Length: 233
Image (cartoon, rainbow, N blue to C red; front, top):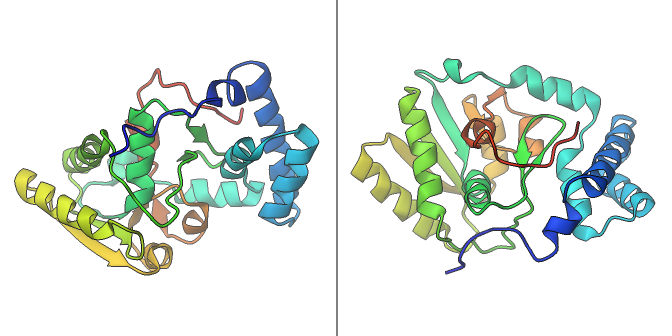
């Protein structure tokens, strides 16, 4: 089992304070400008990455942080306050949120997008493997929504991803042990299912955020006040 989802070897240089973070912010500004004018995400990222001499990992970061101004406005209009969660059913983008929290608990670099959503640099590549922080990440989510009196949590996981079945079994055991009102669904197209629901979505996936009726920025609530993350302003 991997130890954690912490920083990779050169991350402290690639995303460190002062010069590098200023460089990242300039790149996010440029890419967001292009997105607002209709340029594609991949071509915009490549163009801006070349201009600022960013490597692939830095380009991955600015892609997650950048967004067209109109998209940012729409996403923020749909974002709910935690006071609105009481009595609501919640739909969670399972791997997206668990991996983000695993990264946070491993002290990895996290990145705040123009839309306020928090993102990281982890990726599944068809396989999910638990780490030392997995159960703590799940507990943070469960306790938060229980404390805010949410009616139910519906977890959605990518069915084709290896070990999704094991994750479902783990979550159902935790729900039984702690009295959580949880449902766990394995779905071939989880993004589409979340986007089409009329429930409060918990995700940092930009494609989903553009299509849901409402969402809640859980990561921003769960991050410690002194956590250092890369911001766009």
